[in-house]
Image (cartoon, rainbow, N blue to C red; front, top):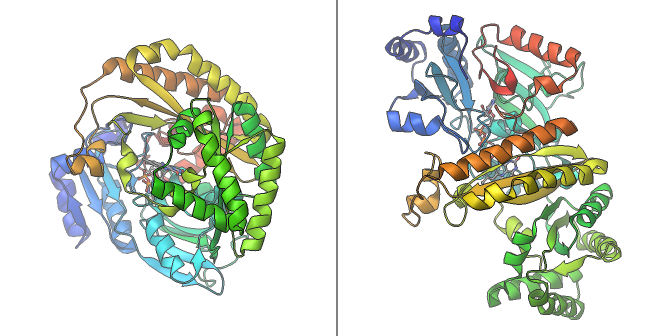
Length: 535
Ligand SMILES: Cc1cc2nc3c(=O)[nH]c(=O)nc-3n(C[C@H](O)[C@H](O)[C@H](O)COP(=O)(O)OP(=O)(O)OC[C@H]3O[C@@H](n4cnc5c(N)ncnc54)[C@H](O)[C@@H]3O)c2cc1C
């Protein structure tokens, strides 16, 4: 993706840029070392152009000043949080780019126990925030992403993050009350609960038109989020974990939607049979014991739990290899009576749908280590992966599943020939929507970010050889899935430079978005190319 000629002509030489940053923003941390610049310029999908510099602002004032200097120097401004994506959302469109590493804006500014809100800087991670709130007996409704050990609140707001807690509470977008956004001019705009001159950070956000929403899911195209105020709730310490197997994915989807509509679970996701088979490898004794213990507390009765657990464990070998799609749930509440009542209702719905109870090790271990170290940057054998997502209302889940499955089947021969495989995650997102997420895996040489995975750093994994055929087959499947989604009119999160937004919008909506971009960023310097906005 190229910047337009006007901007390329205006870019000052790199040494002038660095000198301006040094004198214009005293104390600003800057990185110019080439290997680091290259690493920051690639995500898990592709390498962008190598950026000219990385700035690491640690205060709002530094951020504003750095934005002003970079914009006036004719360079593109690209925000980057944890950098844990695969959609080209922060990969530089040209070498005339300065990456804004926002991880040093990591203060938790204010927790209001009276108003149940928290105000944070955008570089705070989900793990950091969750741990701080837990010490006060509080939690976020949407707890964060799998990547939340390093992924940031700002990156989540740019991408529309969702997962832990999303079946009941939605993603980050449903839980943000206000923002402070730094625009290409270096101005800081207060939005939502931050809009009022005298109201403080927790002001009622719907005082006039809700402008904060315009800056969500924007991949940083409209500005850099510096601060966010999020909803908080009292902790829900009681949990119950359930898993069920289905031969037929469509029946599993129907049950998933039914459970979501009744708001019985806060995590509710469907995985493909490969995951179920791995789960049904008989658990190690310690695992089995922990599963039994968990069931006992879920059931509140050791005898009943033992019978249920025994049945699940005895059935495990028979179910292995049966091609079962696994539906996994986390129920959560403030008292076990409520949680058990919800669990009974789920079990009744599951039995009526013909589901087979499975050991609930997947949802339990996902919650026990909420934000694991990022070994998952690579597959178990060091393979690469990229994911796509498509959001539909519950009543369109089967149509989407069937259409995407047909696309995957069309590619099966090419995939087999070059070692590409697909796994699937379908996540309930409130009672209204589901997120369908195919994940494409193939063995290939790594991008710089893959080399930062903990197992690679520890020397426990070495880089596979390049596999051009596998990469081409994966990208061909990816392109066809994107075309299929676009035909069905699905919505998406994590737009980056991957999902064609403008052609999908009503013309009047697209015109409004373009004029907003023009107003906020007339020179087109703010993350050019994301959302298909060239500036
Ligand atoms: C192992 C793994 C697990 C994952 N699990 C999940 C999951 O459970 N749920 C999920 O939704 N996603 C998941 N993801 C995808 C991704 O991690 C999330 O979308 C996450 O929210 C990205 O946050 P980040 O801080 O890494 O953002 P980045 O990747 O750094 O940035 C994301 C986008 O936002 C922009 N941006 C970053 N910070 C700001 C800011 N302050 N202001 C304006 N724009 C900004 C960037 O330019 C970019 O376009 C996963 C990825 C991996 C690798």
